[in-house]
Length: 149
Length: 139
Image 1 (tube, each protein chain N blue to C red):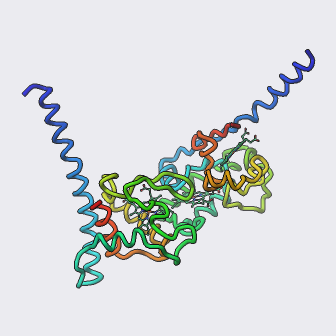
Image 2: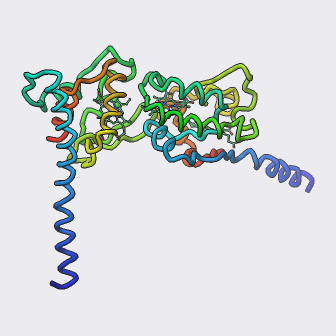
Image 3: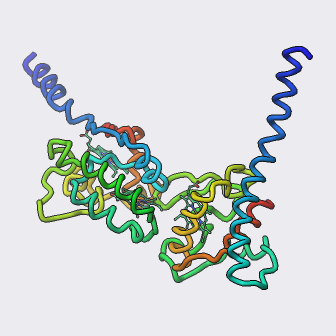
């Protein structure tokens, strides 16, 4: 009996960790423009300073030119920064443990990301293409849902 | 005519009108590039599907190492769906497969601007853009 209870307790206390949810991108322009080449990354997955840095150099975006008219960039930047993990969120989740003096340009570079996923094997990489293809494994990633599946 | 006949006739005319409108859209975009091509070179002698095909398939080293060719993402066959490096599907480039291609000058310009830089390391000329669209409109 005691063992069953302990097992149940373990199951229940670990449940919240089974699903990580953040707000999906609600801004139409950001959805379209930042979802043209990859899934739209929810703003809460990075701190505001990262979105600031990413939107400052879209002409050199990870080896591709993703440039947009400045007025469009300004709108996207404002949206992403206002909804960033350290602004709208509680600073927990994926950006937890990120030193203040670091400005990662990638979600996949966050210490928490590596802690959760480890390093993907070459076989997995061949299937997913790039580690930032979250929605390959998390079907509802664009909706901000990261199920442990 | 009965209501049903009207609906059938309407659907028929509607069906005819869509490809015609799409072609008109591509013509408008092409006309803009033609004006620019003439301005750049008064000896401009028209767009060429053959040159457009060469551009589509060419392999280049001046751009990003992961993107040597337009076909890197748009695939070797413009009639097929392509894929970005990050795994997102891209509608086929051939107008016969994707009728809305090259009908919105702002969209077309945005992507020529980006992708020519990414692949060729430079902007495309109006001549190259017109050749590319001419090739993809005739497949």
